[in-house]
Structure formats: structure tokens, C-alpha cells
Image 1 (tube, one colour):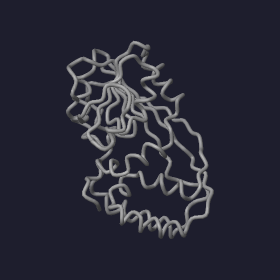
Image 2: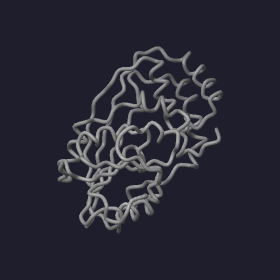
Image 3: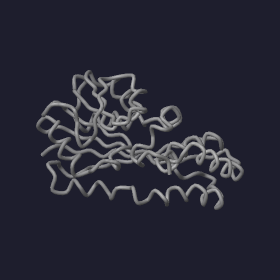
Length: 241
């Protein structure tokens, strides 16, 4: 693997990540605003904001938006909101500052128990948390077994760096039980676009550039395309009790 730990690997492909990742499903973000009762004057945080893909959606809906991101290479692409260096375990904001915290495709990288305590500290009474996830790995038609075998190997090597399930950490926390809704859509991509998407996954982003390019040269010969990607969008939300 490269020099970066898995959770911080995305900065090595920051521009590609920002450009090719599937966009957030806007009706899902509007649904979060609705179920959490957030008006346009709300003060919200995008926690683990990455390159600002979710932040850019939030600033069109709320007056005050903070974006907290630990990775310098990702944070430099953040061009909206009030941008801060920080982590989910150490949020650089005062107690009871926020009406809501949004987390896009990042909660599984947090130390969940510490992050939940810190989020609760930064929220106002009865403040809200929305966790947005996007799943898109599968393709139609499926990749060949040879391609899957090549792509799977770095993920197997990186398995020991992955954190356990995060949702169980809410049991006994200051938050109400999580509620979740799912939405689906699909996009069509060619083989080169598919490989760019795969390059933004943690295990492949953590490879050195030379190793990643060598891997993709081998995988590309196994791909034809086009490929349909079923995109599964998930929204989970909760409030402080």
C-alpha cells in the first residue's frame, strides 16, 4: 500500500474523487431537511467534508454552513462554507453551536463512539444528525471474474484497517434510534470512467500511483462496457433526546 492510512487515502486522488464520484441525490438531502425540520436559517456542519461535494449542496439550502475535513489535499478543494481543519473526534466548534450535522460517505471512517460524543457536544438541544451514504460498486453486466479478482486483492490487503460497524455505537448514546430510508437510481459509464470511479475507493486510492496504474492496465484489458451502475442512496437520521 502507499504511505497514507486507509481513512486518509482519498487525498491522493482528490481531484478525481471530486470530479467523478456520483453526485448526491438531491431529493435525499431535501428529505433530510424535511424530516429534521431545518429551515433556511439553520446552522449546519458537513463533517468529514472531503472535497466539498455535500457542502456545495448544503450552502444552497442553509444560511450558515461549516465544513470540517482533516485531509489537506481534500480540504484545498473546498470552495464554499466556512472551512476548518478538524476531525469527527475533535470538532473545532463551540458547544451547542449547531442545529444539525451532516455526514456524507464518511461515518464508517470515524471512531464512532468518540464521534457521537463530540457531535452531541456541538449540537444544540434536540439537534439533528443526518448520515448520507452512496453505494455503487456493482455493475450490469457484471465484471469478469478475472477483473474482480484483480480489484479484490487490494481490498483484502486493506481489510485490517477497516473499522467495525458504526450504527451499533448509537445504542445507549444521547441520540434517538436511527431511522433510515433508501433511494435508487442508475447511471451508465464506459470502461475508462468506471476505472476512474474505482480509483477513488479507499483501498485503490491508498496504492502508490505506479501500483494503481499497473493494476488498472491489467483490469482495463478485461473490460468492454458500457456498464450500468445501480446507485443506492441511503439517508439515516436521528436527534438528541
